[in-house]
Image (cartoon, rainbow, N blue to C red):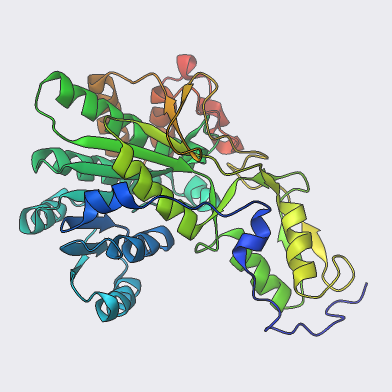
Length: 388
């Protein structure tokens, strides 16, 4: 096969993401969301990211009093603020450069703005990168979430909604484990506050799969590769994932935030898993080309921490329906707050000292279901015999 045997018309490589899903788009009833957000002060962490920025756009439609855009990425935050300030006719917009691992700085944000609702989208998400940087996974995804959740309690914020991932279910990666640990802390904190009679807060977790078109996701990568004439690269011919669009994901986050009453974990129905190879074939054909004729497909092998298939619900969980057929509740056994708190204290200390292996070992002690797909961490899979 000749490489670059056909010139790729870039105008053709412009996908309607809904066409790639092989299911009908999800449409929601906005009434409950409007009741929750109208005239409220809304804080969105990770506001400049793919999910965060779409959340900002959708929240704006419900006429909040103000939206605080919080991120540590200066240029993306600046560009987002320019976009939003042009269309925010009756909503005040504040852009705040802040690192969520700095609780002192984050405290000043809560003190100044007194949010009513917090959507927590800030996180590191790329599986292979976090396999090589576990201390950053713990600092951003675990400590960062703990800081935000603690301040929600301290400032009596009505609603906290955490954006999690299907990779937190039976995690096989540092990224997935870090998000599951964050979930466990949020749930344990809520239960502790409730038992003490202190909490009027709702701590809600939303869990969904891959988001089509988000930064670094497979569709933009395949698009660039097709535009360049190939090859399109994927890790395994059998690998599959759940997918939804950014718009669907954010609509469901807002819906879950409005319907949640306790410390629920909301799981979104995303249809059947899509084989990445089938997605590659479809994208190449939609560009007017033929797979393995005009555009080569190259299998590169699974990367550290990567699973062939993802799961949305732990097999030990009890699944409850809601009034929305696309939203389910996964009831999972909560952990004792003291155990979670002390485990996080130890792993954060290891992370701050840049002790990679000790950090991962502590994660595995806390989450025995974390069975690493990365050979360099499999030594710690037998947590009973792990003595550091």
